[in-house]
Length: 294
Image (cartoon, rainbow, N blue to C red; front, side, top):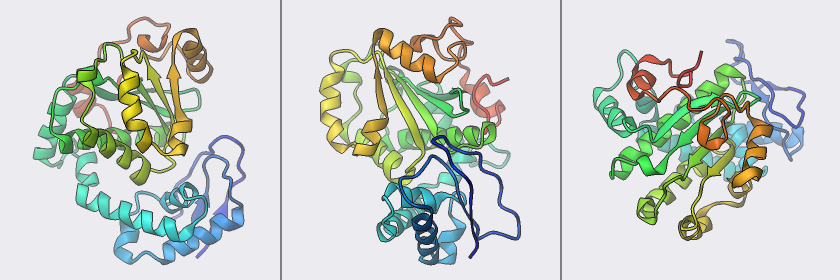
């Protein structure tokens, strides 16, 4: 197995496609790791050697092993266990079917599920931060369904879409989440099982994919909800969560985003952006483009 590396800074580097004759190349890219290059090289080799051919065929991309290794702080054996679980989950949950629901030969039943789940605009990918990471918006008060499995399919669709948009735009690997809690009431809080399922997907099956999660307009009652779920949020994820209140929240956003491109509830300076159109977003906009992307 050949292993190549790229010089890294504190920021993510662009990733290129693997040459056709180097399918087993591990390219060490992404945010600067706390691990040594040697640990990453040997760890990735150990992880890939532990996968059978079917598992290798289900890797989402050539960096999946590295992300799991970094998430487990260099513990290759634990990374192997977690990666195998993630690959089995991708197969059983039908991630490819979800991603391709609106392609020419997409699954019609999945397309119907996604259309219903998205019709209120409770989730969508729109715009990028200054470095080219896509923004996945969530608006909990617009929740329109109660079936957890389909809500998780909606989540996975948008995670995969945010990843694809980021890769096309900048070649980076991570994305942002922005959650608008305006109007949130305790009765709007999802069941505990749904919250835990959401965290499981983001933390276990998409490690090293989340850049930041910005929480806007959390009302006082949100503290009750947060106190219930924070025990299930791992320490690494907690460090990525930014609660945006008042002027301090606007300063945080202005540092990371072009404020003329973000939604007005985040302090966007362009006023109200064009209204979200679910049909256009799902059926007409390419999967690796955000809504209303020029």
